[in-house]
Image 1 (cartoon, rainbow, N blue to C red):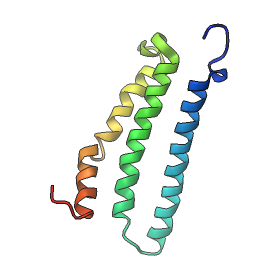
Image 2 (image 1 turned 45 degrees about the vertical axis):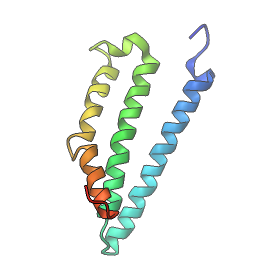
Image 3 (image 1 turned 90 degrees about the vertical axis):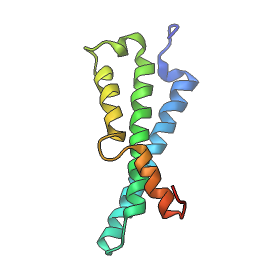
Image 4 (image 1 turned 180 degrees about the vertical axis):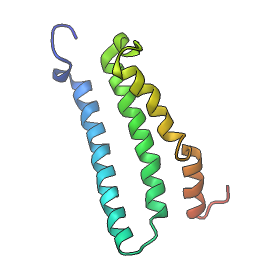
Length: 112
């Protein structure tokens, strides 16, 4: 971009750092769920939160990849186009975001 690598620009660096932080939070949630499961605890809430956040993070990563690759990212021959298209399935295939939110809302005592 304008003669300099994207990694020298503030926005791409901040975006990549933010996405990396989201992935780190998901790793911590997975470790927590493994410990809970090993101890025989119910992980329904944690798994629902993790699934919701993982799907959204996946979509955010795909969106950033598409943005950073520009018009080339939309070309069907590029990995970004496939990644972008496939990322949407993550929030549909194991339960839509709305289903995850409904489960969480009920666990929190809301009547939806």
